[in-house]
Image (cartoon, rainbow, N blue to C red; front, top):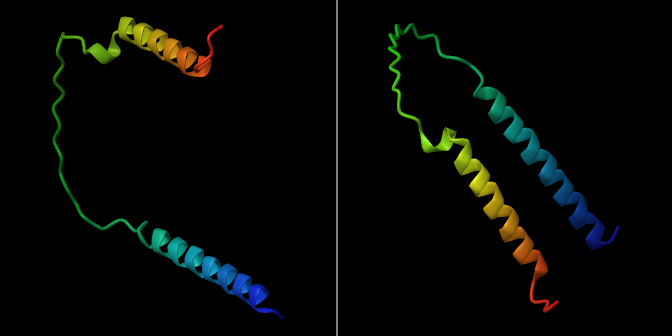
Length: 79
Protein backbone atom coordinates (compact mmCIF):
# COMPACT_ATOMS: atom_id res chain seq x y z
CA UNK A 1 0.00 0.00 0.00
CA UNK A 2 1.25 3.42 -0.76
CA UNK A 3 0.92 6.46 1.47
CA UNK A 4 -1.94 7.99 -0.52
CA UNK A 5 -4.14 4.91 -0.12
CA UNK A 6 -3.45 4.76 3.62
CA UNK A 7 -4.22 8.46 3.98
CA UNK A 8 -7.56 8.04 2.17
CA UNK A 9 -8.45 5.06 4.34
CA UNK A 10 -7.67 7.02 7.51
CA UNK A 11 -9.80 9.93 6.27
CA UNK A 12 -12.73 7.62 5.58
CA UNK A 13 -12.37 6.09 9.04
CA UNK A 14 -12.32 9.56 10.62
CA UNK A 15 -15.46 10.57 8.75
CA UNK A 16 -17.16 7.36 9.82
CA UNK A 17 -16.18 7.92 13.45
CA UNK A 18 -17.34 11.56 13.48
CA UNK A 19 -20.62 10.64 11.82
CA UNK A 20 -21.21 7.92 14.38
CA UNK A 21 -20.29 10.27 17.25
CA UNK A 22 -22.60 13.04 16.06
CA UNK A 23 -25.48 10.62 15.57
CA UNK A 24 -25.04 9.37 19.13
CA UNK A 25 -24.98 12.95 20.41
CA UNK A 26 -28.11 13.87 18.49
CA UNK A 27 -30.03 10.87 19.81
CA UNK A 28 -28.86 11.69 23.32
CA UNK A 29 -30.72 14.99 23.08
CA UNK A 30 -34.08 13.31 22.44
CA UNK A 31 -34.83 12.48 26.07
CA UNK A 32 -37.47 14.76 27.54
CA UNK A 33 -37.06 15.80 31.15
CA UNK A 34 -39.84 14.88 33.50
CA UNK A 35 -41.13 18.28 34.49
CA UNK A 36 -44.64 19.20 35.34
CA UNK A 37 -45.42 22.72 34.32
CA UNK A 38 -48.74 24.43 34.34
CA UNK A 39 -48.89 26.99 31.58
CA UNK A 40 -51.75 29.37 31.11
CA UNK A 41 -51.97 31.19 27.81
CA UNK A 42 -54.14 34.02 26.72
CA UNK A 43 -54.78 34.89 23.13
CA UNK A 44 -55.15 38.49 22.13
CA UNK A 45 -56.23 39.56 18.69
CA UNK A 46 -55.84 42.89 17.03
CA UNK A 47 -57.61 44.29 14.05
CA UNK A 48 -54.51 45.83 12.50
CA UNK A 49 -53.08 44.10 9.46
CA UNK A 50 -49.39 43.38 9.25
CA UNK A 51 -47.66 44.44 6.06
CA UNK A 52 -46.37 40.89 5.56
CA UNK A 53 -49.88 39.51 5.19
CA UNK A 54 -50.85 42.12 2.60
CA UNK A 55 -50.78 40.55 -0.91
CA UNK A 56 -49.93 43.88 -2.56
CA UNK A 57 -46.47 43.79 -0.99
CA UNK A 58 -45.96 40.21 -2.18
CA UNK A 59 -46.87 41.14 -5.77
CA UNK A 60 -44.61 44.20 -5.76
CA UNK A 61 -41.78 42.18 -4.22
CA UNK A 62 -42.16 39.37 -6.76
CA UNK A 63 -42.19 41.84 -9.67
CA UNK A 64 -39.07 43.54 -8.33
CA UNK A 65 -37.36 40.16 -7.90
CA UNK A 66 -38.21 39.09 -11.48
CA UNK A 67 -36.95 42.40 -12.88
CA UNK A 68 -33.77 42.10 -10.81
CA UNK A 69 -33.12 38.58 -12.12
CA UNK A 70 -33.76 39.73 -15.70
CA UNK A 71 -31.27 42.60 -15.32
CA UNK A 72 -28.64 40.35 -13.78
CA UNK A 73 -29.09 37.65 -16.43
CA UNK A 74 -28.83 40.21 -19.20
CA UNK A 75 -25.40 41.17 -17.93
CA UNK A 76 -23.37 43.64 -19.91
CA UNK A 77 -24.85 42.88 -23.34
CA UNK A 78 -25.77 45.85 -25.48
CA UNK A 79 -28.51 44.23 -27.58
